[in-house]
Length: 183
Image 1 (cartoon, one colour):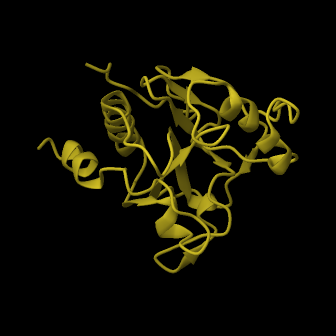
Image 2 (image 1 turned 90 degrees about the vertical axis):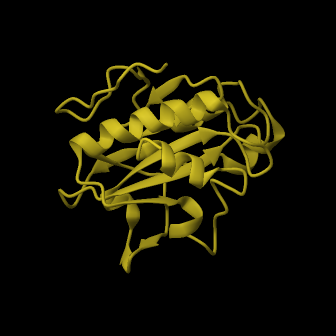
């Protein structure tokens, strides 16, 4: 069973491993009503390496894999990253705006980074996510709900449908949402 998580007043989850990213800035608004679920793997469709962590902290060696040259200079980060074994990493305080959503719109309001929290799951559009990931995602979501006035949860594909497909067809929305209601 995953340990119950808590968000502190500075926006950090003590149960997460912290790797502060420079890819954030101040939020232009105070309300945080949206949680955005993503998937990522670096190199694409390969799991277990440090590529995502290095990308989010601007330390990616572009010579370590041919794909990395195509994303050289990219400055992005989510707030959280959940590895396939359930290990939780936090890169940006929830009080700050992480650069995870890009051009996006939710319920008619553009620039989702301004008012959302981004969670990346180590994965791709081609494989199911793990039980450990769903368990940690559930506990993290419940902790975030206690601390922020979250009104919605969306996939990256929901807020940027012309550009993104994640979290992808293997993300089990029914399982995830049912776990939040205790069913």
